[in-house]
Amino acid sequence: MKILAILAALFMICIVLCCGIGAFLGPTPSTSPSTSSTAATSPTTTASSSPNAGTGSSSNSEVDRLFAAQQKEYETQHQAWKNANDARSDAELELARIEKEVALLAKEKPTPPAFESREWATVVGNYKTEAVLVDTDNSTATLRKPDGKPVTVPKDKLIAESRIYIDKAFSQLSEYKKQFADWAERSTKLEAKRDAEDQRIVSANKPEPQPPSREAIAAEVAEMNAKKREEQMAAKAEADRRAAAIAAAKAEEELDVNGLVLMRKTVSGSTGDFGGSITGVVVNRRSRKLNYAQITFNLYDESGAQVGSAMANINGLEPGGKWKFDANSFGKDFSTYKFSELTGF
Image (cartoon, rainbow, N blue to C red):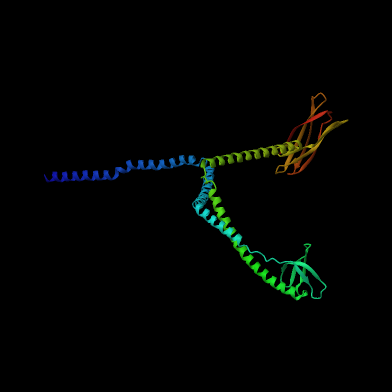
């Protein structure tokens, strides 16, 4: 019986241990794939959304930039307009008050002293005239004669009565000039105040600023980009045209065969009693020395039938070197010729 009890106890312990190990190891395989799947899915989602997010990003950022700048300018202008409207009544009242003050000040404008025509004479008695005093600095006197012409005379040359008259006139003129200067300063300040209030009212009378339109800005940006693309396409077309013209002009002058260039304008043919020859220049524009180079021309008679060929060759043509060839027709007469082949190695 004791042995059976011990065996039963050992059996129960094994069951508990197996359940515990299973509970410890079991979730790991089933949970891992789910976690791994989630981790693998996340980059895919990000990668697939990235191209869509980048579509038109340049144009959109330009629209955003312009909209933000115009919105800021609008807010500044609208706030100034609102402030001007809020202060309109005060500005109108202040302007009315200033207008009244200007009118009153105009009445207070100082009047220059008036001098009557009188006789002026010098101490030595060699000069005497009837004239009106115009101005004086208490050293000289400016007089206006009956004919309207001004004349300036030194004070110390005049008789005592005239000098006394000038002293009094100088005092009156000095007082007038001081009063006029004070009046002019007050008048200038009032004019400045009136202009400022006028400007406030003008600002209040302006139309209310309108906020910027993102759609309008987007249309302007699209139009600007389209124009820019047109200009770029036109510039490319012009560049291609010029390149084609240069290539065409070059093709008329040069025949490039893998870096061996036949200078077309140097080619000429001639015939004589013992056949003929074709001469010209070939330039080696390859970067290496050529062990051997050969040029061949086909020869034709007056009917256009090919009657043979003319050939010339050279050894050791240096890079950048010019080869003045003389292709011999080997005694065959010909009427015309045509380039056939240019090789080198």
